[in-house]
Amino acid sequence: MTPSAAEISTRTGGAGRATAVLVLVAAAALIPMFGPRAALDGTGEAAAPGVGGIALLRTVLFCAVCVQAGEVFAGRLAREVACSGPAPRAWSAYAAWAGFVAALGLASVVAAGNLIPHSLAAVDIGGLYGTRDGTLALVEVNAFLVAALCARSRRPAYALLPLAAVAVAEALRAHPGTEDTPLVGAALTFAHLTCGALWAGGLLHVLRTQRAWRTSDPEAGAALLGRYARVAAYLLAALTVTGVCSTLRRMPSNTVLDQLTTTAYGRTLLAKVLLVAVVAAFAVVARLRLRRARDRTSAYAPARAEVVVLGVVVAVSAVLTAVPVPIRW
Picture (cartoon, rainbow, N blue to C red):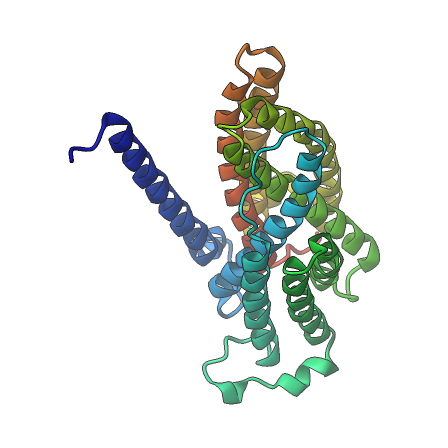
């Protein structure tokens, strides 16, 4: 039987989406693997051993938090919209297990003295309990394990508690006690991570929900995107404030412009800022279409572009945690 034009179009569209996903996954892996090396080129700074692998593991960890936290957040918004359409398939459990594996890999690096272990003999599991970094790494491993169990329970929203523990551990790890006012820096990083996870993960789940509702009630999907957009505006404002404050703590105002081009941290931060500006532009276009366009579903295209660039932002953020912190002049 000869396939119809609609069937051929559906197959072509499915193949195109699969190809796009593979390209995005490859890009998400290449950025953390080669990003640190590119950022460090010509700066005279020394990279930590295995910095590319560490950045890749932290990318997976951040993505896991975004997916699971965003699913809980956007799922609550979806319940406020009157629609009988089906819910998208949950990704929380898969994300939590991916985060568990990434956290386990990062813990093995800490257990090997912050070196990439090449054998099991190089990993000192007991040594994790005696150091601050080791304790924080264990907290992340156990938190993702609990989050995976929550994802399969009747109360998947409870996963927000262990995910918050991951964010706290990451914030404390990024601000050791040797720096000035480490708790202030940790609080800013925690708020930044939380808002970023809800923004990126929430938009991903909103778009997946919209796709599940596209035949049963397309207008409900637009209404859901509108609800998300109102909250996302506050998340973007909080991200901007905490990001600026964190930058000024790392790089004093009189040295920021110079360090943005002469240090690996500054270059990576500059790339992140430019990408966030692109994300904000897509967000504005999507919000304008929601308010003014006759067909509100036209807002989906810029929203999809927004979530794609947000994925790149997550990968660049992981690189930012792996490159050397700039010296305060």
